Length: 108
Image (cartoon, rainbow, N blue to C red; front, side, top):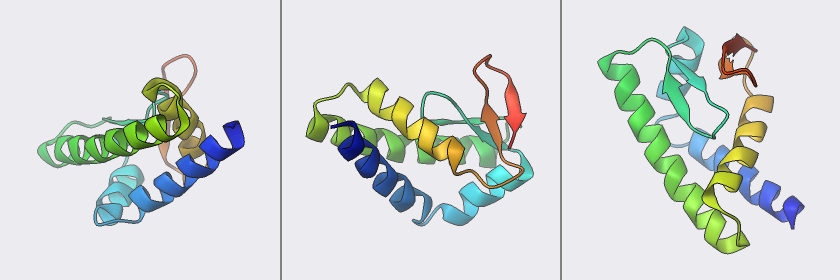
């Protein structure tokens, strides 16, 4: 069950990272404007109109995908998002920011 959930999440993450906003998300990560949170969503590290718009777009898309996976696997959305977060953070490119267990921002 967990393996199926992880596979579905990985597929969703690859899809979400590879769609129209990929350049923006990659740029946001590379510049340090956004970081990956432990809850499966991103946050603006350096708030700006562009960073805030990117955060809203990416998080809205992720929420839709997490809800879909949640229904398919009978898991709460929060569990799906947490599992996705682990996969996303594990696969971040070097130099990307992510939220550590203590809540602080760390660089990969």
